[in-house]
Picture (cartoon, rainbow, N blue to C red):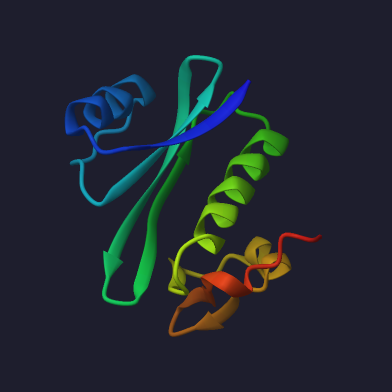
Length: 119
């Protein structure tokens, strides 16, 4: 079963990074992706005022494209449940256009309550 969970325990996030082979310093808000009980990816978000910067999204190479899309859609659904905030990804990501993201200042942005999950 595929699941997503917010993890606030730095040691657990460090262990997840190590398991995934990611050599990054833990920071921001980390959402871990699981397949059964095995961590298979994460999304790290930095909050700055009214903007949530999706700083890094990582999946093991074995994660199928459909499962990656599922995790991203679940994250976007979670964003819709909070007070409206700008969701930003640095760089241009054409795959985000289907969710309503638009190019802005070298990145892709949308207000959380405007994310389109009906496609």
